[in-house]
Image 1 (cartoon, rainbow, N blue to C red):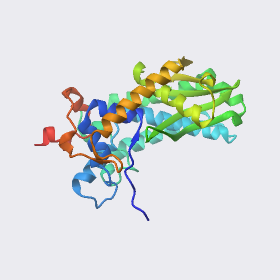
Image 2: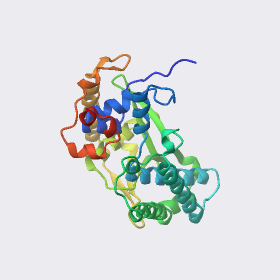
Image 3: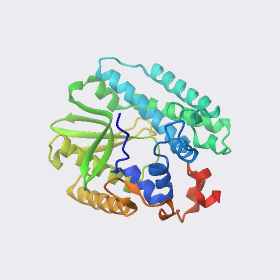
Image 4: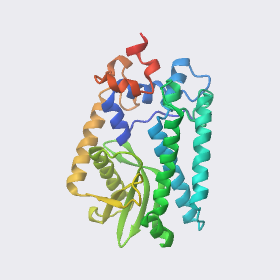
Length: 307
């Protein structure tokens, strides 16, 4: 079997990480590579385990997204999962994650056992706060079920559905660009893309995300820009409604500029861009915003603090 290759790629989350702290980006994308092997060198293994930690906000978002994915995929197959059943599955998942993290099972197998950032770094999070995060996750799921969109999806022809949480890619500037659309469908001659939100929206980040979604949709389904619509769906709102986002040539142009500039900066830190081989770690700068360090997965191995 051929060895896995660490191929250079771009995504909105990758750009955010690089912008936040280049050294964090190095640990995540390069120092951790190969760390899935239990017999990997200790620094590599540690970086890989820490890379897979989730903070409680990301945990909430991923758990709710995954549950809605199950609900929609079942619906597409002709099965309707009642809210109470979905709620119980979500609760069971979160309880299992919580117990597994507390037992530090992620150090044995980080891919199959969730590690919570707050537990790994012994943050002062009381039981009440953990329960509130569980309850707010359930509330997000409940809000999805109570929405008019859910009722609409129940009744419509599922053959119009295009994507449910599929990781997709397209090429730009010689790089793979990864996008993960929460949900997409055809409706009234248009392609509609939905992005579920369980937390606060960052307008600028959301715009870049929508821009990449639109670029992907135009290429994937050979549709003109005017046939692409995009919506944010805030699950934290009671009876949420789809908030349509501006999809325009201006957005596409701005997204292209953002992607191009970001890719250029990332490649500037590669000794061999063709093989995605990085320069030494010291060339990847630490963030100047030390407040961010308190929330970094790699704090315990970062040379800024471990020297």
